[in-house]
Length: 209
Image 1 (cartoon, helix red, strand yellow):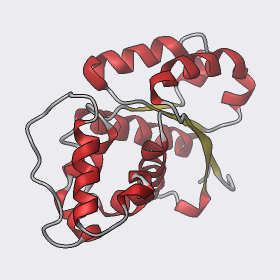
Image 2 (cartoon, rainbow, N blue to C red):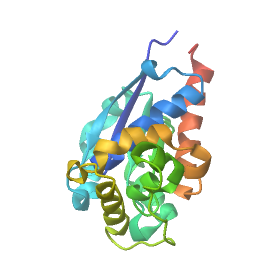
Image 3 (tube, rainbow, N blue to C red):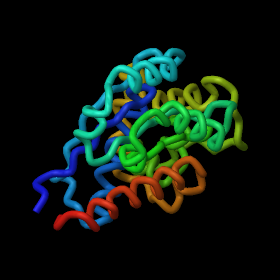
Image 4 (cartoon, rainbow, N blue to C red):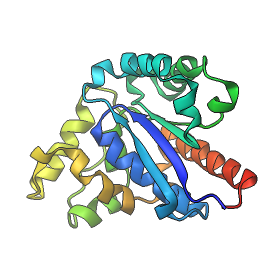
């Protein structure tokens, strides 16, 4: 029996880190793998504008040994204006030099267009964390830089919570509350969930978890 499932991650920023790592544990539990048996560690880039360049450098320098030490590797980047398909294609190209067996362990988390939209998508979950009526009305899809970030900061500030802590301070609470079926309205999340469930099921097919 495998004692733990090792998940490494490389994500764009702390807002992704707190939300996505919580989602990973929830999806593992949904696949019959207790959250306490999932070992998570990784890297969150502090300057999102340099994230792709840093990830490319990371892939080049880390080598197959680091990737092989993980059962699953999660890569998280906002879609931005490029869109989900183009961002996933870009990330696959960056990881293409890796051994094909290692590529099969990667799950791509690509919020469309930005991670803050995942924080806001399930308004019932948002209200359960910050109080009834605290969720802002969701606007139509927009790719404006920082649009959802400002919307989220303003919504948190209006509840009396400290928005200066940064949205990452609330990522775990919101990620624990969201309904995956609601969040799957975002194509990037739907594909991420599919990637990750497939990765966990691959482990279960090769190990007595």
